[in-house]
Length: 238
Ligand SMILES: Nc1ncnc2c1ncn2[C@@H]1O[C@H](COP(=O)(O)OP(=O)(O)OP(=O)(O)O)[C@@H](O)[C@H]1O
Ligand SMILES: [Mg+2]
Image (cartoon, rainbow, N blue to C red; front, side, top):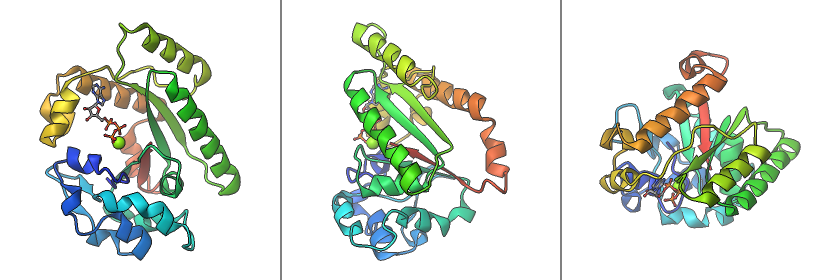
């Protein structure tokens, strides 16, 4: 899991302090240090991390003058793709060169949104970016999934926002929402995933529901993993 966010929250949620990491994705993308020298093991079997810290906050400026600046992440991941089945890229909420790198490296895009009307603006921008990527850089994503997070059905505005999403983004919106659940904050403060913290919580059950719905729509991910032609799957979470 490459952490692309300079806040390093994905790293922290996995119990790894990004500030202490000597090298981050910055060195891989800017200085071409091989990812295998940057990857750290997490406490979970089969899950390795490319850590992030505040140094990543200026990466767009450093990418700007470089050759193949949109393709640096894709190229870096190519070197290690034989070792992994999936890469999950945790992206920051921005539209700079780093996220463009993430989109160019990804097959599938997961977009978590809050059920409020501000999210519509962000979604519109994101879809414009994805379209320009298709036109200008000839990269077409296989799937885009929008998932409503921190949903509270007792708020009328949340229901209305969800209905509006259903209407405007019908083909992308997942039916399964992730409800508000205090266990997320507790799990992240302990640096473990929700499934390890409380697998029976609303949050864990909803995320499982999201995975099941995605599997229903695009097939069994195990088969995807094993399909040699498809190669390792990369998923970006924007
Ligand atoms: N469904 C939810 N219910 C309650 N709290 C949530 C939920 N989803 C996220 N949170 C809280 O918000 C925090 C940040 O969530 P998340 O990492 O999904 O958001 P983000 O937009 O990527 O933010 P960042 O990466 O900047 O922290 C979580 O650690 C958790 O405390
Ligand atoms: Mg985040």
